Length: 130
Image (tube, rainbow, N blue to C red; front, top):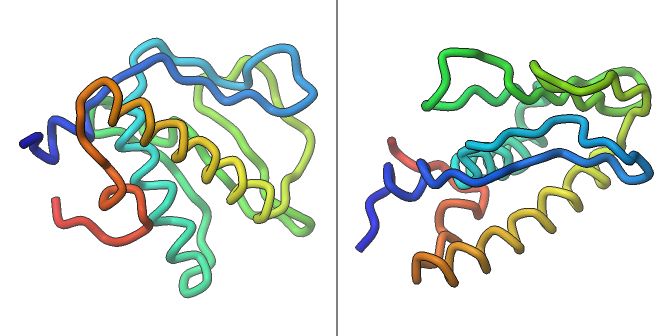
């Protein structure tokens, strides 16, 4: 059985590509994809109780705010610490939730295929004791 730290430490190439853009907003060769998915789904699940911005800081990095979602008057701004450009568009919470859902669906299938493990309990939006 895979341990929690082994699963959350799974690294892969990761990028954030905004629809309509030809360049990734953010790209990382060694991105902790399960950890990111776990924290994003927890944030989305908690958002109705605590309307706060999202800031991703990995257990594997000394840098904070690697990826951020900041609430502005008419939507959410997506940014990254080492972004390739500044994205001017704001996104609805529905657009963000749809993108996260699609990412999590692909990630679950890839982890199941490569590691023979289902990570549904990690990326369901519930709290995990670390």
